[in-house]
Length: 280
Image 1 (cartoon, one colour):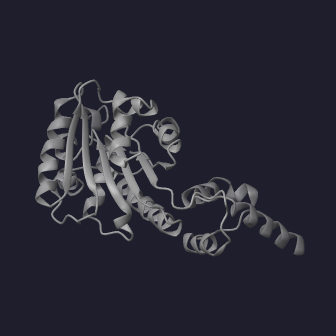
Image 2 (cartoon, rainbow, N blue to C red):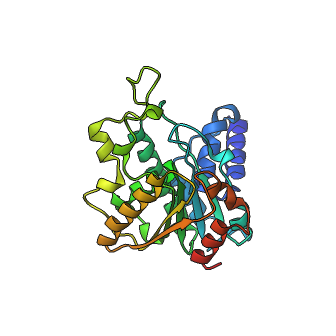
Image 3 (cartoon, rainbow, N blue to C red):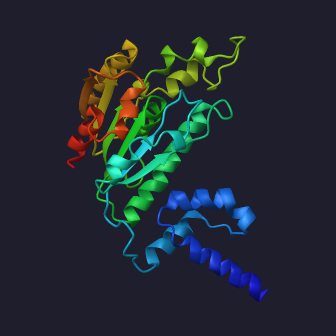
């Protein structure tokens, strides 16, 4: 029994070296059973990090940048979508690349809920570590899901200073019935959408926007489908009526994909835009 307790304490001690709450939770989910790590709830983990002595290597006060990938809610993952990490990390940012369960294993309503919960936990971490500010940046489907926060009054939301929505989809009514969102028989929607949920989950049709102390940047590329710019313009006009500061910008050299692939290049126009709005 004594050896077991010593082993448990050693494991918890090792875990305490991880400074990022989402990383710790993911680590436990992936390896907890094999390594016999005891269950740790998020609230206990936050208290543990808050009460321990300050680690000189811990990035206290550093701003946080969260990136959420696209992929039509059905493809890609954080491992292949970390374009923005190096340029921002070199400028002193803590960069978190989020992930989510893909459709059709879960429906879109579940995915949106997952993303909201993920942002809530990161905001708690940001508060505990005295982050100066937080930026949400999503591409395509990721832009849609971060835009979906705008009707949610979440704790510590005032830390969010920028919504950077790149080629986002804000009106699902335009796409839910298309062939790309149906199986070969055109009878099943992999996102679980129908006439009702395509409106409910469309930021364009939100009835009760929550005011964030944040600017909204609606970015598109010239060489992508015109509907991306069209939706961005309409959504931007809606947000302006809700007293949001909105920046609508079309990059002349990008299509739907290289607009985010170029984020890895410190000299690209998209990265320069990010540096400009973040004042770095």
